[in-house]
Image 1 (cartoon, rainbow, N blue to C red):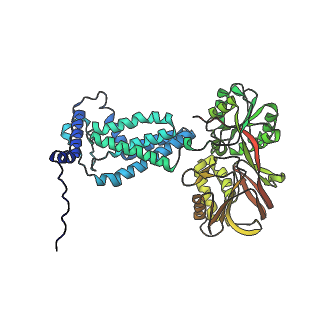
Image 2 (cartoon, one colour):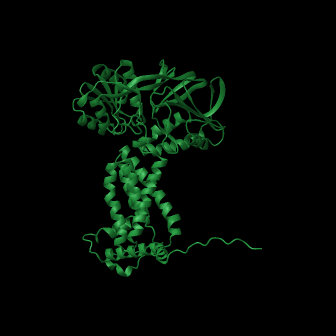
Image 3 (cartoon, one colour):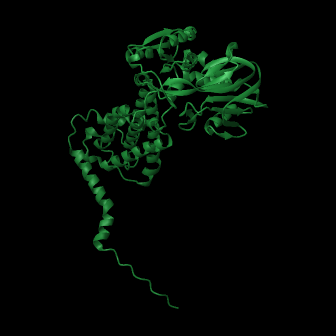
Length: 506
């Protein structure tokens, strides 16, 4: 039996075949030629700097130190930039060292070409392609720049010098460095795809409203809580940025009276302190019908950050232009200490969280806010029992009930920020009673704003009725703790507060 002959394929022309096969070889030859040029070249001033810089970048230590220094400045933008830089570095390092280096086993350059005084004392033993140091340097610098151009400009020369040091000391070819840097940049953009930068997020707050423009702080009275976080330093910054403003510093016990007086004297009320202080100021501003100007001066400053206010200058810009938005005010009825109602700008909660807040506030002056929070969480979860309450007419045992003023969205693995501060909704999350409360709370945090499971539930509501609360049940609102009993209702005052918000930069 015969088969039809298949058409013959013409052979590749000899010249073309050689060119295809010799492309990688040609690139390698050029790379080695560039390495020889770098080895022969005199680099003025580099001998005292580049080898040390190269060693300092081993295992990312240089970049971890830079991130710690940035975070220590206290600037929220610097902290975000540092965190993004470290996350980008981690992704780049994992990609290079676990995937790429094992796939392309290129030998290290021959050190005979490099002067002995430039060589590292301890030579790396991994393969040459690509440069892990260059990938980490580029990833960190790019990640920082994506969040803060200013800090990125400060870090970029150091990152470039680390990359150059790998060729200077003879441990990498120039091509290794270029590919490593490209992978580092790609890692930073991949992290940005998972966790957007602030500039990618929607403009915080709506709807826009008119407020008096107060350039220089004219006709503005700012009340400063002397006991709030960094309020003392921020008070000096307020005076510098707004020389025409009246700044009143007072003790925590005098805040309520001072805020009422300030709201009556100025065309707008200013406040500098943490979220608890902002809570008092928001209530005073609504009561007297004046707009509120917030200057972050506490530890967390959630409300200010959700408005896009991170520094005193942000609020100063809003005051100069008269840019403001309407925001909702959360309410629970009855309020604390016999008041008709209590209010919150961020969150209301009961269960384990109020006790956690109480312990954190007791310990934080001695050991700091974050360590106190961790220890308080451990202590509370170890010894507390689930809270018994009735929700919407049904009995429940629960570890936590959280009601957010507007919907908290994701910025990373857990909900952290609000894009809309006037949506008329409560972000209600319940962690049901049962064993392993720590794991239940973690599962609720990772689940997001809309979920239901045997462990937790989350949904959007306009009001919530809570009943059958035992006497002396603690509740927390904006970091403050009070005691209640019986029944209460949680709802909203839609668009009740006018607050200055900086104009969005293009």
